Image (tube, rainbow, N blue to C red; front, side, top):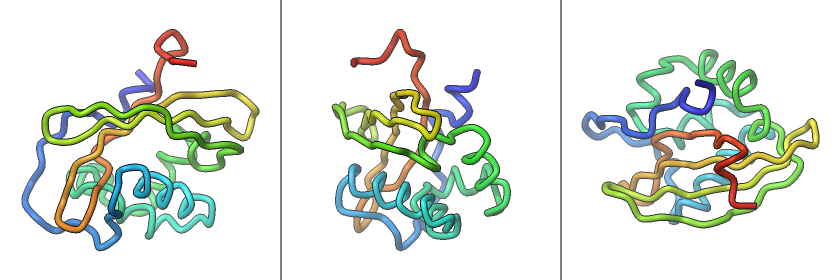
Length: 133
């Protein structure tokens, strides 16, 4: 399933979090999306948890996954932070985006707190029937 390309429940392995972690989940998501907008996949990769970095292993694989599977966050026309829900080990932040094709999408970002901020543990594209708008 496209929406579960990145698992929401990922076992974390040790330290090594990128220096890119931001103070809030929203700031981390916005910073990563801004990095995508500059095609700065190295910076965007730093906002991912070590487990996600381990899954993709290279910037090239990570970049291709984003461009092919998540074009709405690679090149959003509009971005809105919707609601957040506390979950064990972190927060799920829902966002609404209008993609480059003009279509509206909602995504859930699984966020994990780390020293100095938050990292992205996983992203799930919601089925339109799950959207809140």
